[in-house]
Amino acid sequence: MKKIILLLFCITIITSCEKEDLTSAATTATTKSLTAKQVTTNSLDAYPNKRQNNYPIILVHGMCGWGRDEMLGYRYWGGLGDTQTFLNLYGYKTFTASVGPISSNWDRAVELYYNIVGGRVDYGAAHALKHGHNRYGDTYPGFYKQWSATNKVHIVGHSLGGASPRFLIQLLENGDAAEKAYVPSGQEAPTSDLFKGNKKNWVASLTSIAGVQNGALTVDSGYFREDLMKMVLGMGAIGGIGLEQNTFYNFDLGQWGLQRQKNETVKAYFDRIFDKTSSGAPSSARFWNSQDNCMYDLSVKAMQVQNEWVKSSPNVYYASYTFNDMVEQTNGTWSPASTMSLLFKLEAANIGRTTASLPLGFLNWRPNDGLVSVVSSQYPIGHDYVLMDPLNRKLAPKGVWDVHPTIKGQDHLSVVAPDYLQSTSTWLNKFYLDIAKDLSYLPK
Image 1 (cartoon, rainbow, N blue to C red):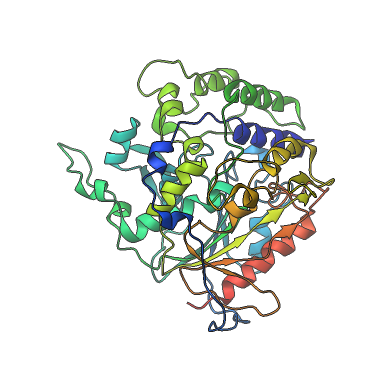
Image 2 (cartoon, rainbow, N blue to C red):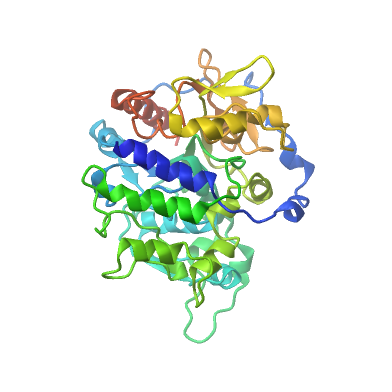
């Protein structure tokens, strides 16, 4: 029952988000963003078959995800199980990050940085000024403070968690021009080291699990605030989950002045988060009306523009795992598989018959995992990629996406927490153990 409510929670968020028009911004993208560049494997070396590195793995949750100290122990990665603990038991040092569940890719990337190294989150003075929120956020102890070009990390992200780390890699290596140019006044702190760049080779690899690399068709207008509040407020009676406990769930929007206050009821907290008409500074209205939230970032047009700025680094190994839980029909549409969760079928069917104007053509966007199209989760359109051959496995070069064969029979959330309809703890443990082994085989 917990799983059903959690699914409803996530689906409501991603299917009901209100969007801003990005048409004018999208026209600035070059034709390169619409051109897939497949790299041939003829000259590539065979994939290594022994361990070559001991870099830790960092798990990054997707939109509406949560950290290990939330949801009363129900894990985003593993459900009633625990992917982090399982991988650690098998000798693969693993950490779990906690970033803003509905924040922008920029804010999530910055929070991920401070999750790792520790310290008070600095979103950037120029960025904060542009979008109208506070420059600083929460303070983290840091779970891998020695992070450097010598002490690299592997990042494994699900859904939006497969995209946000690309922004972090971009900032690490190249910094940000606006932040570099910002001149602090008075007692204001100087620019964060993150935005200065020159941190190449800090990330050994990025693995995207059902990642939203090119946008999600499920992001459209709707009754987001009302539906979400009903879903979440109804979770308190399920399975002993107590909504009145501070450990239950946090939207991590402190930079907007939207953190939960001491003794604030859950209803009052959600009323404040989702009140687009509120006044004051900063306010929820500013958040929802800004271009600094994941609802804005998740549109196809926004991702198309962002993929021009966020490059695939020549210093990082990339891999993607995609899922298709649909059945092709004779008329060219796709329908949900009979085993797909009922909670996904309506949106999956809508995607399966889309005729929208889309990069690479709408037919390629119809196969999906219930929420994200296969074509969106394979690689950022316009970036180099290799189609992995499991019978003749090759080592994709750094900067080139190693696109694994699409896995059938799993939906968007069954690949992170077992639903016991399409996935089990045993299946998930083996899936992530195989990924951990692959990562450890990568050359230093």
